[in-house]
Image 1 (cartoon, helix red, strand yellow):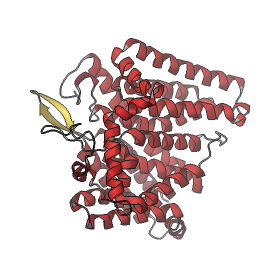
Image 2 (cartoon, rainbow, N blue to C red; image 1 turned 120 degrees about the horizontal axis):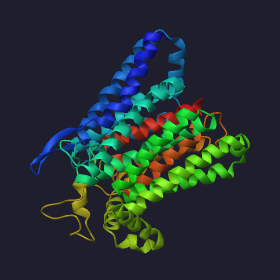
Image 3 (tube, rainbow, N blue to C red; image 1 turned 90 degrees about the horizontal axis):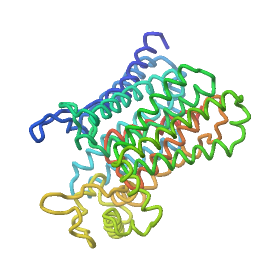
Image 4 (cartoon, rainbow, N blue to C red; image 1 turned 135 degrees about the vertical axis):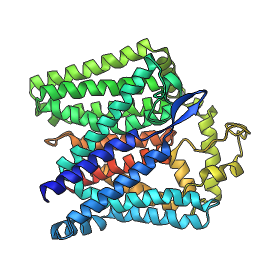
Length: 433
């Protein structure tokens, strides 16, 4: 691949990480400008740059027989085939959907993801290209975090996000928190790599950036984000100590540096919770469900879950059509009919991606969707034993998303959906290499 072509692909990948993260449209609310419209600008940005990447990669490799052999191989992988089966099933489900165009809205996003997926498996196999994408992603999120933290101390339009001081100019507060969790373990992997390889300056820089992201995440007060982040972090730390190779392969100096970084991060986390009554209260509400799981069965999310089970019971095999949960849900409100369903507000999501997707695409579609995720997760190295820890942290990043989907709806938001499948493609590229 020529230098100019390589640079162009690197640039597009950098912009893919950066532009969707920062894509928003301002709107007027309560007499001031806020960044209100965020889903559609991000969706359009993902689609445009994804298609652009696909066009450029194919055009620069038109006469490259090695590339086409690799691409054929990627197309024939069981993971890719099952992804195509899911996308095709999503399209077919529009024929019996109550609102077919809602199915097509979701189908187009999944179609672009599926077409690009085998290409990403090849592209992300080159660390130069992978680092370009991750660099754009990190810069985008550090900008979001810095602006968000500045707004807490001095709210000034038009940078005020939804939710005021506790909002985010990424979009709504919760979507920002979920997005932070969706990329933070990839970045922790980069920081770990620098510490492990004795890159002092880069270790300090990445640690500072991590601290900013973690502090901002805590200030957003998302209970689902708290649980997903800390649970995945705990699993990662446990794996590090379980697999002795990681400890044996590091010098005393490297272990001390890693211990110092972890101590600083832990101190900052405790400090933010200690000083922020808002964060403490949100954290306390999250812990309640661990101390008394029965509390979940009296929550509004259990109501959405239970009513969604009713949808699945009536449509177990075919589902109600991709993207149609919010239109069909009112018909199946057997319990808690008044919860988040009035003349002024109506629930639009099940707050559990698994149950919502299952109800939309049925048993067969859900199997097509789930198996590729589990295949990639299973194929990754969890032992920190690579020269680079990328594999383990990609696995942890996918795991964090799996936790997010339990009690929230990241798969229903275009930005989070695309980022999830890009992360899956990174995992697929690593496992295939």
